[in-house]
Length: 242
Image (cartoon, rainbow, N blue to C red; front, side, top):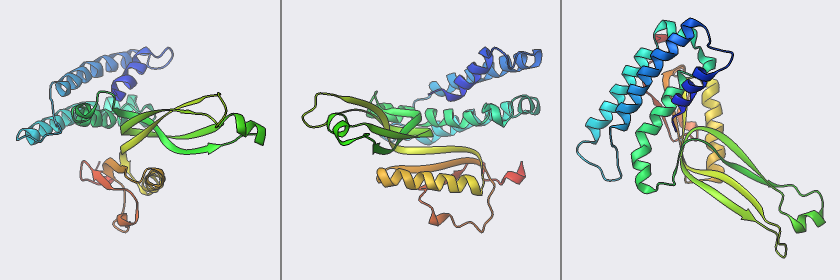
């Protein structure tokens, strides 16, 4: 659930990387600000299933907390020390999605799936021969990594009729998938469109949303042809504006 916090913890505890004096100092400074951001978000309860007059005000506060933390984290010395391969900066948006939906989802069920997930993509059966097929399903579940999902975890047991041999599988089925990007370009859009189409082929009622901070697309791209339900560009700016 706390994807960004986990990323930060991994860097703090890494045995070989980030051991120099600058890295240790930067990580301490980021940890202090991260704890403040996390505490501020957990102090807000919104939105819930039932709409209230306070929802807009509280959501604006969540966005303010996000902007304050992002502005701090994107200072040049942090950006140079922890580049895009470290996922430190990109994981902020994923954790923000958790804060945004945690209270709403928990009202439905404390067992609901929320956060980074490996969701169901497809199922195959691969018995080596017919005799084997009669005794054991040999199901292969293909999974897809998602930045953020809201859904349910399925615990499945299969057996062939007449056989006592049970085969157990666990997978996640999403109601909503949110793909988080630092910036959105043509390749990323095409990959997301393919993922959305695959999701809806097996789970037609699911919603696929793409969220990016910056836009790196020309006006010539026809967004309506894709199976993505909605695309949000949070900064409402192009990547070149950076």
